Image (cartoon, rainbow, N blue to C red):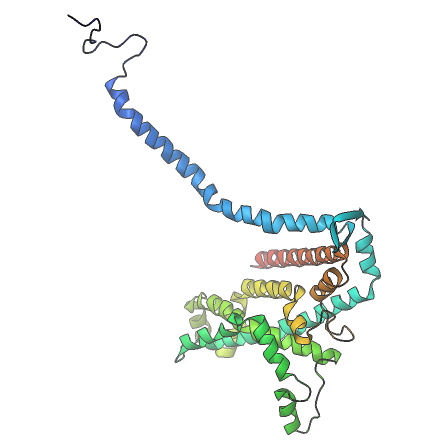
Length: 330
């Protein structure tokens, strides 16, 4: 008995199913591979940077926009979901608030007292480390030790050093006949104490930034200056400093931003959000903290946060204008 199904002859295609050519059979995997390669080359960079934008949107952009929206409302910490529209009232109240202007002035004063000595010391230390010294690696690592120390540990140590009755600094001053100083309760003394903590923590960090920039300066410039009779001090003034202008500008801007956001050092130094009994060293960060988490006024705290943000934008614009002017002069 013969089967009713017949096998197709070689080279004859079945009905409704065209037989692919031999060249198509060979090229179809190659085409898919090339297509996958094109897709990979096109979309892989976006996939690599996508996590950054996702986290930035979740923890950076959304809080910024939500804080801006909350600054236009009256919001209590007891009921943060209930918002009452007040428009620009929170911002106008800041202009009438003496405590806000006091915090702004303290932020500026502490910023100047900490930034200027810090960067000058960092520039000098980087100049010394730029020479070939024994144990230079040890000194460079030691420069990062204060930066690696937590702000809580550093501030607590400095609080004990500046103690009125048993502090080591007053003990040293007593050896030369100076009476004990109440560092925390004085206006200038408390701000000086807080500034010294910032100086101690960030000088080494800026030193390494300057050192990296100095090592990028061509040696030919120093050799030419030496042939012209310039000593090391003149080489530092006329070769090193001009070559470090962009780096110096960068550190000034970053230090200014850090001073505007100063929070941990003054909070832990006195242990209070008021910045002393007379608010003598209360910064904008402490004032924001007081308004939001002690007075329960999240709307006002949001307005302070956005005011700080606008101040930082102004600082960034000034940085851009100065950098543009420097590029034109060069």
